[in-house]
Length: 183
Image (cartoon, rainbow, N blue to C red; front, side):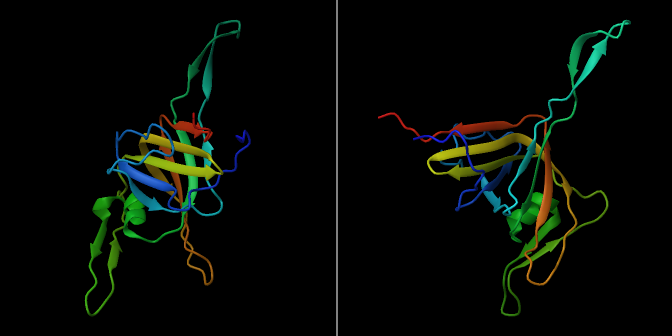
């Protein structure tokens, strides 16, 4: 039986992925991901918020009658929180050129140094989020998106560090697989 009402639950094996800009999205949510896709992080239990921008500006005549609607020039947004403090998460947020990783030695563990300064930002990337609810799978992705905002980081005892993000893209793809395979 298919569910027409889905829960937005992420996959246990990974939910957020990144690839170079213009990397093709999978054909369907359960498809084996191409080698270019790498896991960024898990997403916090707050999940994702997708704001598809369907704004339009009315073009009115002299009598103030709407003649046409012109589409807005802003893309849709996806917001959420990454939970992991690993190189791929930090590279997605701050840009690969701004994260320096040093292998463990006898004196220290693996090091990840992030350079944060004015004018430093990430570059456009492809983003993919996968969700699974029973046999149903949903994917939300873009071939070209920009991680444009990062929320304040809090370092609090007994709380995970959460990297709140906003990704903007001109085009997003939402695809559901109801899990009902043909026999």
